[in-house]
Image (cartoon, rainbow, N blue to C red; front, side, top):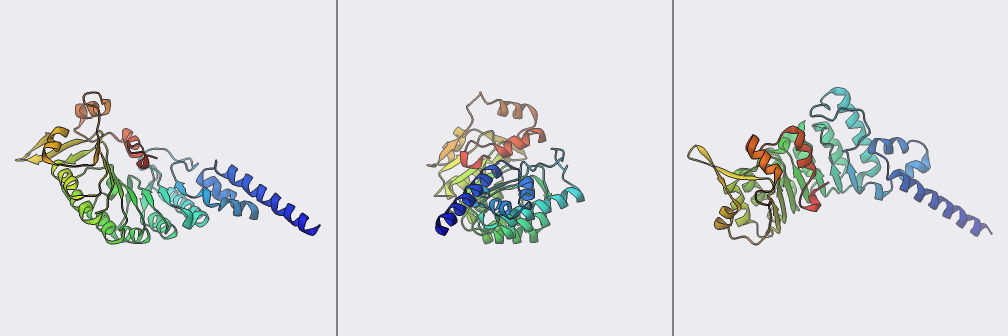
Length: 298
């Protein structure tokens, strides 16, 4: 009789747990952190691994204007630090994908706080603005030694970041650049990510020499996304633009190349009409979020 009663209690507790977890899947990160403080049962449910495979900070449930540098300030910075600490406390080692909010002004404190608490991270999508030191980058990349996929933004478009990736991150198989792709980028990824399989460069100027170097050197490369890109190089003081046909003539590659449909891409038409490759900040979030390679979109 006691066993039956015990079994029933266990069954009811488990059912209650499952219901809570299902409800919690609809909550924002900030709301989930609040729910975890209601009672012990809610705290246990809020730590369910299924809730923390991906930590997506795009929807924080906070009343902050959605514009660049809107998060630049002491109050916003403290709120972000608090959210990251709560989320990593609940999800911690279960978090395998981290997508930063596009508008977050990232600091060393933010980056180090989340990096040290998410040792099993496999993918990170970085924000576009912030102030990160060389030390901050080193600590984060060392903590994320097992990372496999990175979306690189203009803020991390520097030698410090690429060197840290090469030093600590040996398992990179996927990279997305939402910034200019120059010769030194190509040299870095050839040297530091020899097992790269997927590369996406969206809506920015791309160095022809750099692209040729990548296609010639990375033997494991399976797919390269060049949608909305302008392939160019500086020759004798002026820019020379190149077509995909020019690229094919210079490089014999076996990987899949994803490109825009000729003369029918409105984004490329508008870009060429305006400013040779750099999109307006109003369009940057879509460029950062979307991708023709499904695994790199979010």
